[in-house]
Image (cartoon, rainbow, N blue to C red):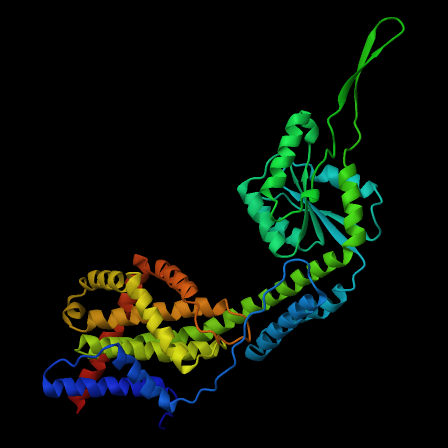
Length: 481
């Protein structure tokens, strides 16, 4: 049964490559094939490809402060869209847990009970502060939770998850912040998490030092936390020695417990809970919606990657065969550009990031230019050439190096596109074209991850076996004829 061809860019482009090769053979001279020829070939191929143009969609920017209910409802809608897309593309996956969480999001907007987290590194006094606050009646419907210590290796993720799952975070420190702590606070603030920074155990410092540390903290976080929400406290002050003179002239000494010094914190919390309760609810619900969307997107990316990898492998061997059989170096570039363009179009369809004609051309050309600029082509060719020297039969075959290099570079292009597409918003087409700077970063990352000797050796061996198998098949066919 004949197979119906559905790759017009690839078919037309490779057909032009074959025509130019025959023309070159007949005239025994190289045909200058410039960049205009490459894109001309691709343009001819795309005449047979009907692509509907999509209106460009820009990712709506999220307003950090203050959050509006409409913004939260939009986040819920995106989570719903991600789950619906996942259900369509992977009906066999069990996503009942995600769907249950989705149904709870609208209810979360009307919550009356707030969860307040007490967080910080080990030894900052979290437990003592929690006990003091629980003994006070700051407001109704308040639940206090204590996170595990931050920056304690294995417990760090759990601490951050608990903090972000709360409506407000009291973050404790006993001195100046480390850079890691500041970065973490900034990350939480970007996720619309309200934070009150507490300088605890201030009683261990003399008054002058207390004020200096407090001002230093306020300066460090001035861009992420309001000055009035950086507060000095002492949740469990040290006991003081009290001397009592007796009537007989003797002196008795005892250690006297001191009351907690948290009045400024209590006043500020009462103000926040009375005036900003709705904002706290919106912030937590927004985080829940965004987290749910990311969970669905992670599963969806996994499903799409499983579909994309066979396509990349198919095109890398098509590129290898075209370069191996092509004696003209400039035609190798034409063939590889044609293959890469069709591959990117197919990958874009898998990730629902459709390209217009001009975007498809730009995508392939951009990746090729980036590879040259980053030295990927030269380094890859050198590495593959050195590995091929261990296989004399393959190395003497003139097109082996070009063929395997073309396959490897096509694989890098495909993997880079996957990494790039996985970051894009679900359901939003890339109407503005590729972000070349971001694509360049992805290409660097993919190249660094795939230039390891072990990977290259495995890839070259796989290519050698494929070339030898194809050569044997052609020889057997010719002998049988």
